[in-house]
Amino acid sequence: MTIMKKALIALTALVAAGATAVGVGSAEAATYPNPGRVTGSTNVHDPGIVKKPDGTYLIAHTGNNIILKTSSDRTAVKDAGVAFPGGAPWTTSYTAGSANLWAPDISYRNGKYFMYYSASTFGSNHSGIFLATSSTGAAGSWSNQGLVLESTTSSNFNAIDPNLYVDPAGNWWLSFGSFWTGIKQVQLNASTGKRLDGTIRSLAGRGGGAIEAPFLFRHGSYYYLFVSFDQCCKGASSTYRIMVGRSTSVTGPFVDKNGTAMTNSGGSEILAGHGSIHGPGGQSVYSDADADVLVYHYYADNGTAKLGINLLGYDSSGWPYVY
Image (tube, rainbow, N blue to C red; front, side):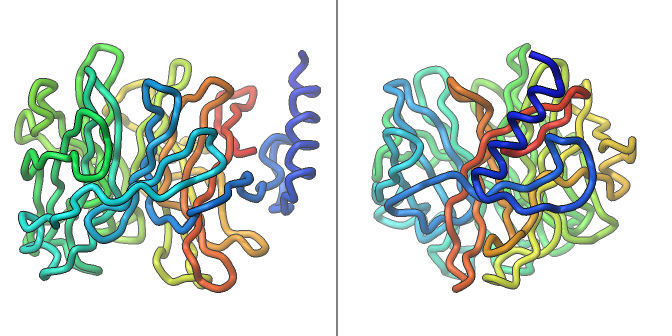
């Protein structure tokens, strides 16, 4: 199939989905689609997702004691309780006593579920990233493995929004960060899931501006770093948008389509607000049987946070686009 024919098919699919024009670019990237169809319990914020060995899906997202949802088909979503029904008292020194825990990253490795999540308060970098594990992923089955990384008010980074990536050689990497000096990365011990050494690498930043929610993903010969720019958590006034850069190395440097380093405010936009879709971001990416899948939250006109799911394609230069 020719590149032109692929582009035409992609464009037709976007128009059929109710896409909104956003300017110039390649045929694949000329429009942003609306979220794909999801039903049921779709009130979600900062979703992490994993496909279980039985083929069903487990979603964890921001909320009191980490909220869990399940789906059998990536469309109908059901409530599945919370990770910590008895609370998570080990986090409350970072949350000022609140049970609200943020941005869980969930994966299945070596017969066990791993969940990294963050504890903080809005606007503060007195924050901690914690690890929990489970043999089933079910509510109440999660075991606290303790603190992985923290930041304090004297730190130049913020330890929230964790994302685990395991490279082809089996090395474990944790990306994280919000505002301050941007997105950071540390290497983890693959045996414990905890920090391996004291090295902190910088992956992306906007000179103190709004950047957060890193997610590292490999496709073909590139490592792609997805991040969210601008303002979250303001309902329909949110300006979150999903950006991406890439590198041939898991540790960077990451650059955008123009060659601008992500450490120097670079990033290529792949999804932004349009029509009644406000502030898409807080994203996760995974490979499913049919395509690579982008999972995120957005806000409806009434300010409710909703689950967004779309597929990712790649243009002739290897850059991802949403359809």
